[in-house]
Amino acid sequence: MDLIQHMEDNLNQNFTNSQHVANFIQIGKAAEAEFNAKYHNGEFSDPALFDPEADHPVTWANVKL
Image (cartoon, rainbow, N blue to C red):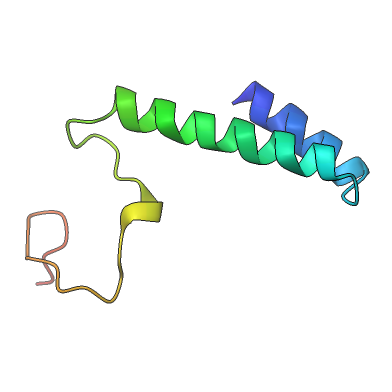
């Protein structure tokens, strides 16, 4: 997470530099992959893989009383 913040700071200082953009994207995708690998048993749900338009079954986490 510190590396993401560092790359974000670099990008915010000069957002027209394409190398900063590429570095930020690369580090962000690596962090996403690490989260998905570490928390693959349902502890973490990747928001990029969630389709809000899809029909979702009712579970204890999303039941509306």
